[in-house]
Figure 1 (cartoon, helix red, strand yellow):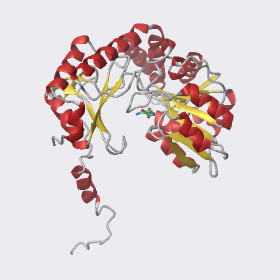
Figure 2 (cartoon, protein in one colour):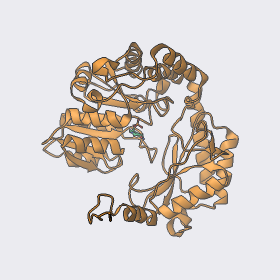
Figure 3 (spheres, helix red, strand yellow):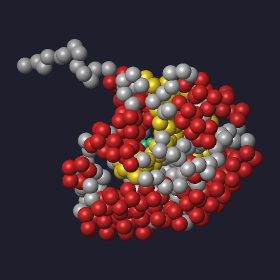
Length: 402
Ligand code: PMP
């Protein structure tokens, strides 16, 4: 019997859409890593020097952190078994929450399984239909998605522009203002000293996603607030991730007693998901202690950043204005960013090409990230390879190598 061909199969058109992505140089391919990822990676059996991990402090492979994970698994098993509110909230999670509250100087901290879920949970618990949520134009996708999920009216203000934010607040105010602390694809900082009083005057929550500032900036790695010498009040909410500088996995929100209790009751991405493995919480407690006490890791990053920026300026590379271990090189077109990334890969160096929709149209770039475990020789090798590509501010304007 002949199989009937349905005219409107749900998968019809997918191939065409995928082909369109490829034609626009936006098709993304995963690369299979055969070992730890930074600074040395193994890709398809080939050793590579990597500059694309967010393991800024080099803690993901630290022996003490690995041992804490192993011991944690022996004590607690692997899976947590259920959601925090059912039976999944272990002493290991609790101890980490207390350590994170103490570290950030906030009354309470609450663990989420991922940063994406933390942002979704906070915004949708605090804002709803009829509320206004204002966000920096370059905020991480999870903050924007959180606002969509909340059904609030989402408005975006110009990047890192306090005056632009104030203009958008006008008379109607806002329920919540959200910003990255360190912008994930640009490496620059939110102007927190200006944003805090604006939010306060407007009677709005200020949510700061410090995924890339925590561990890297401020005293003991306390993040972007501390970098500016600010002590946040109860109307400021800090979101931090654990899978970047802290080298493990997960995220947390820190704030007032009432805020955390509200999230426990109302944040759906907290309530309706399995608690992360307790052993990961044990590993994070170990990495947090190292991150706090080993200032040399942050100092090393600063040395690498200064050395890279000096070298890149001498070579005329299109660096951006970033004081953090995220050092993007602006390419402009997707084709240009991909061509640079591929050429570096041929030279044994991994650097990701970041394209729309992750960044705005016309601003595709290489995203170079440093880790405290990169050596001077690694950085020199990167600069030499970039020089061989003969990047220059000029070439980004008119070259299409692909
Ligand atoms: N916020 C920012 C600024 C991020 O860069 C990321 C991760 N890319 C997240 C949130 C999400 O964190 P997670 O990876 O833990 O979901």
